[in-house]
Length: 341
Image (tube, rainbow, N blue to C red):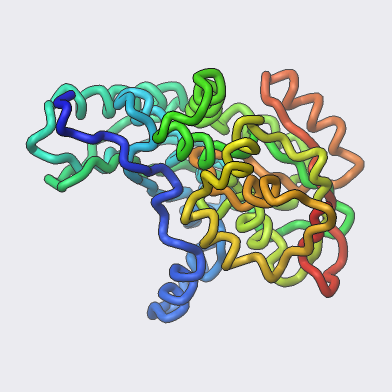
């Protein structure tokens, strides 16, 4: 790569618009006539759209793209593809087709684009899907992702707001990749911590999602740009409350050190501003707060399941090689939506 070209300027889900901005814009869009076959749309805060085709088949539709968060184009392609397909898994669906979304400067070497798309294509193949084409435009910076279509049974959709009092909250993957990537750009992160973050971001949520149909999953979402607490807020949907046991939250250890040194992200502060009033922290350190607000790229799943099934699900996930933890529980709506301590 040419020395005057900066490939990674700060990207991934830290580049997303804040949830407050999106909420103000989306609330003003015209809705049109109601279509009873649109089972999930942007009237909810769910992860993808779901449209019923028959009594047994609905398609799940999503797209996601962003600028690079790592210097290696191949790894960037893998991460962007894994992140885009994650919404299909969060809805309980199976990936079927994907289309490339590419923004690329004409002054860059084409082998960079080739490596990005190679990484993305390999992840689509790993998912069992078919890469069917795409669209590209010339731009002043690199952006890449996928438009993805999957299928799901209309009666087996995992909503993100279907949790019930008494449910346990189970989380896969560690938090902190936003802080790690930010610190890495300025050379403050150990190589092993960055390698851990890359391994997490390139891991498909397919393997966790495939365990879920055996259980009574009440709600599921993937943790991405709005951070753990932002997506948890959407799960509560104004009708539930929860307690999070901070000691049970898995995170990359170096992320704590980044936050302790105030290597924090603007996106994390947007998340704090958006949901901070819905959270009560009890003896939680500032670095740990930042980890909970930290925007995740290709983050894990957050699952609400009856307490009686939680241990069985953890065992099933472990059998599939998926690391997971019980991080809290849901109860009836109270004055404070999220208690973290």
